[in-house]
Figure 1 (cartoon, rainbow, N blue to C red):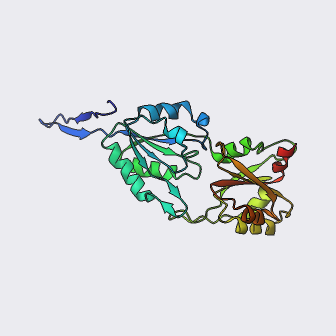
Figure 2 (cartoon, rainbow, N blue to C red):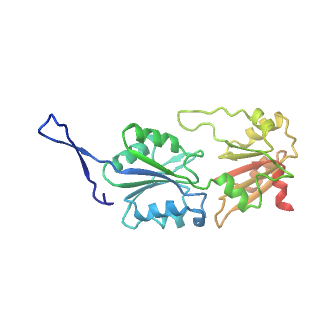
Figure 3 (cartoon, rainbow, N blue to C red):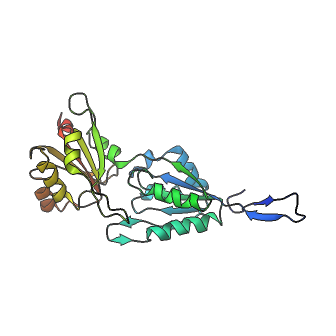
Length: 265
């Protein structure tokens, strides 16, 4: 099977004189693009971009990574930003199905890692339910990479021996997760919050109610690993005010815990 032509599979039955021709679908690759820095793109992901027929890509995929895509491949923007969805999730999945029926190599290019708050599991299940093969190519997630670029190790023998990753966006699609912030605040020394800027005031209030002191350090990291990465450092007691004063805007992750102080060592 080439990138532009697809073979068919001959299904025969010894009792039938005629043969049934069944179409052979292409394969969909759920590829993690990483957090932005093109140097963090995996070699396997890059190779797929260079040889694919179609790419459906997210809003947060950097221009440098988009430049890796096969120049003759069809490129479809399927990104989602708060309040601005180019395609509904159902439309994205249907497009993947349609393209897999037409082409051999279809890439669903997702920011970060497909299985870390990226709906990759939903897409994989829907594709497999209609008989389309799926392969996942992991990517580096921003919750790990952005703090590293900011000089914040998520674990350290003297600061943090446990870390939790949690979404701060509690209204994604049909499933509306209820995050138990009180349990999270008590169970890990470092909390990494994805998509938490919009609900930051509520998150801060809940973790302080659970017992975290207002002096607990907080780092907000915007555009992690990109050339314009920026950080806003504060504590639970003042971080919401600092965001308002500086007009700090998403996309950003939050790191909560004493490990934030390591960047000053």
